[in-house]
Image (tube, rainbow, N blue to C red; front, side, top):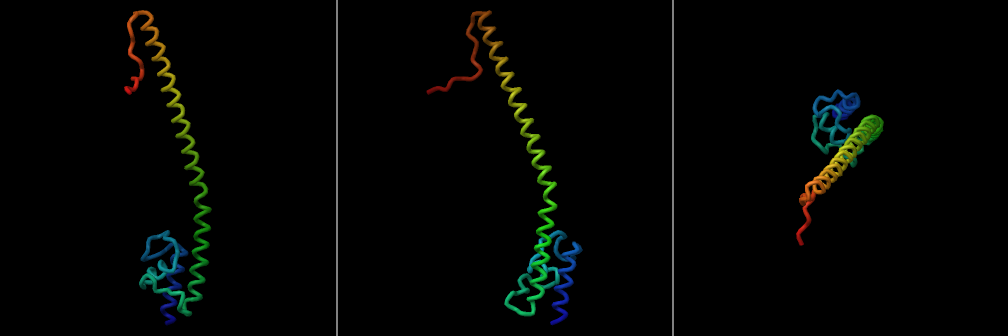
Amino acid sequence: MADTLNDYFQALERLKCGTSKVVPKGTRISNDVVALEAGRGKGSIKKSREMFAELIAEISAAAARQAKLAVNDAGPAIKAAKHRAEQYRRLWEEALAREASLLMELLEVRREMARLTGEKVLPIRRRREA
């Protein structure tokens, strides 16, 4: 039974170091992932078995460290995403301003045409029919 526990602890170390052999690298550490990495079935690490108490404590600590690192690593990515979102918002607002300006210019030109020719010029937007 000591060999089995040793397999689990070795699998946990590989997951902590990011050198896993079975599960994809960067997978979130959990009891099931450690079991799969150790070559055992998912769910083989049970809280009800006393022999796994120390292993489960180690897994919980490693998962907490991994989660903390993930939050710290996400900071620059979130900042960059917010910057890109603000940049696209600015571009969108500039495009709306250009379109509104062009519509006003078109309206002025149509009014001037109507005044000079005396003919009725079609409106920019159609009226809704009731």
